[in-house]
Image (cartoon, rainbow, N blue to C red):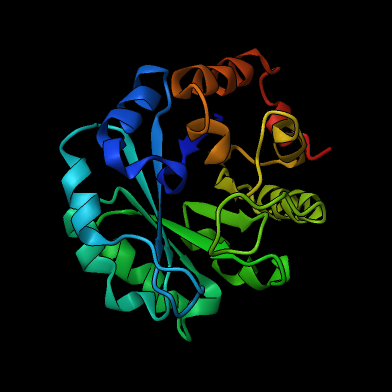
Length: 227
């Protein structure tokens, strides 16, 4: 199943609740929340207080993406403030398995992310322990970047690895996804689409509806062809 996860990093924080509500009204099931610490990535974004403040305003799935150093320090905090799924970067911790276990202990969906420069083979030992693999299709830390074309091969390789293990694990892509290239990621095997500027710049409901309608019109199973 294809899911849309609009990234609030591109939203207007003066009216954040209203803008999230617009994506919900148009059918987006998830909200993507980028947490950046200024250490793992150069930028600093938002943390627990923001998540807690918007948690009561929507029943959408909170897809929390930690771009922070040593994420094991914060798992319980993000679980307590309203995260439904917690994704962390394998490059940010010396003990990937311990972070997976910490997220699982909190009863949350586990996501594992990797930067564009990290070979896809490095995630293989963890694939049977996670619910979602996040493939960054831009360098993490900044919104508005262009999709890195070589990411398509990595998505395709990831889907082949998962198929080889008979796993239906989600593959999420984050970065530079717009109307004109979303099918490139989907056809390669992704099924969770993060979109920021493509949703929040312009008419939010119309933008969200475009993606949702587009997903519904695709032939069933097309995202699994790996072509």
